[in-house]
Length: 190
Image (cartoon, rainbow, N blue to C red; front, side, top):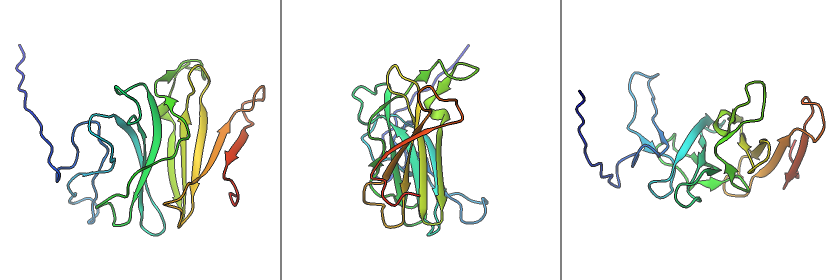
């Protein structure tokens, strides 16, 4: 036999997550002996799924977070966009989030890739800080097409301006070891 207990969770303005769909961050300033309360990272309305977060810290101690976000999909649809935000105070508060993907992606599984035939969007996200430069890579799967890897490079001082967008995907008909790089706003990208 089973016994279930239900309770209503009513978030307040000071509570961290509003439900299981929010991205939260906890931090430790003593090597993991103690941890902070949960701080909500995403700033979308309640009841939209946010998933697969990635976190890094840059050379100026800014905490950067990126994730797949469904806020722009009515009825919590299957498509996702990639969002990012950053904290100037070690993860206590976060700046308004920015959408970095130019178009939504099918958030499901693409099943005609690789030896196992399965490729999940969330299997492919990376966030790396090198000094003052932030590199964010994510997967986009246009409906009915193979997945592509997109990325942004954000330089120090660019946190409020549009990042450089770089798309990396296998060139049509080329061996898998070659890639085609397309982009917008690429001046100064190395």
